[in-house]
Length: 237
Image (cartoon, rainbow, N blue to C red):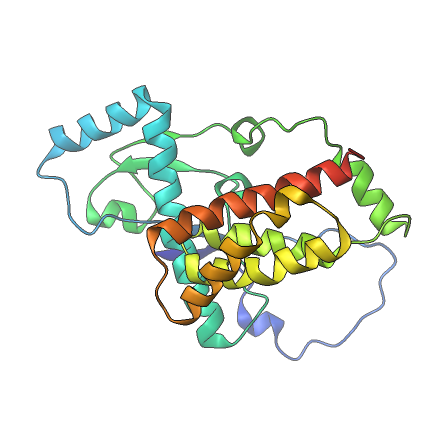
């Protein structure tokens, strides 16, 4: 269930003409609330409370529950992107959410963003895993300043990773096929080259609409190898 909160009235947005201003004041923006609800209800309140208590006690189960919810939301966003033919409809991650809550309640409660009981997860900064010695801010400045260029392979590998994370192995295989060729053309890596044949086989299987489990596992290894090669390049190793 999706709900837009704090959106300006449409009648106030229509027919507006540009106007002169002396200061660029920040504009209030709407936020969206996405609620992923299980199709099958809990048998009763005790079972629901036990489920939530289990998530509170086990961080791994809580992360798994959150990942499953984000995957469902992203499937909806992907469907909207394709239906609207709008390439700028992007997917989301839990780390980018303003607030993340996990809980249970009656149908009417959860429809309006309320709960019988819920957990509010730590802020995105606390949830985000620690990064390595990489300094993305420095790279960002170098890219903007023209001291470095974005390699085509960098974007392609990111897209392959996003497809894998979203459970789209067919798209990931096709994306990885182009990514590995682009990477090998600019960054020599024997480790990456060793995955070339496996990626090609996965891409061919994807074109036939059949991607066996062995190909999916090989694809994951190949994308991880490409990510590592790009990381080493950024670090100058």
